[in-house]
Image (cartoon, rainbow, N blue to C red; front, side, top):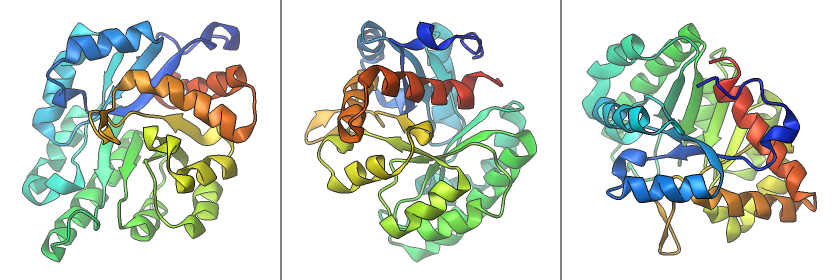
Length: 258
C-alpha cells in the first residue's frame, strides 16, 4: 500500500485514484480493472458492506496490485452485523482503512434499524480511533447526526463519500478538515458542482462508487479521469494541477503512512 508514498509531484501527474468502489459487485471485474489501468487509475479503494464482501475484495486485491481493500459495515447491514464489530477490530491493521461506514436515514425508513446503525457506527469509529485508521463515511439523510458523532472522535482522516447533504453544513465540514469525495454525479448535479467550487482542492477526492449507475451508465474506476476534468473546469484551474493535487490527497491519506 505504501509503494508510492515517496513519489515526487512530477511523477504523479498522469495518475488517478478511485477512493470508493464496490469491486466485489462486478461480475466482469477483469475488464473493469483493465479499463482502469488503461486510464492510468493507479489505485482503487475497494470498500466493503460487511465481512464477506471485505473477504471477496481482499481476494481481488491479491490478484491486482491496484486494489486496496477497506473493511466496513454499511449502515444498510448494521442491524444484522452488530456482532461483527469485534471481527473488524481483529482484521483492520494499524493505520488501515475503514469503509464504508456511517448512518442512513434516507433509504432506511424503518426507525427500528436506526439504533443498530448508531451502535455499529460508534463502535467502528472507536476502533478507527484506536487503530488510527482513515474512515470513509456514508451519511445519507443523517448528515447532521453523522457530523455530531464524528466530531466526538479523534480521527485524522475522514472522507465524506458522495456527500449530498445540506449546504449549511459545509462550513462545519471545512472547519473539521474533512475530505469530500465526488462521484460522476458531479457532471449533472448543481449542488455537487457548488460544493466543488466552495471547498479547497486539498480536500477533494474522486470516486466512482461503482457499480452505481449515473443516468443509466454504470460507474467504474476509469470514470475518475473525467471527474478530474470536470473539477478543473468548475474551479477554472489548470487540469494538471488539479490532477496532481487530487492524486496526492489520496496518497497522503491512504499510502504515505500505510
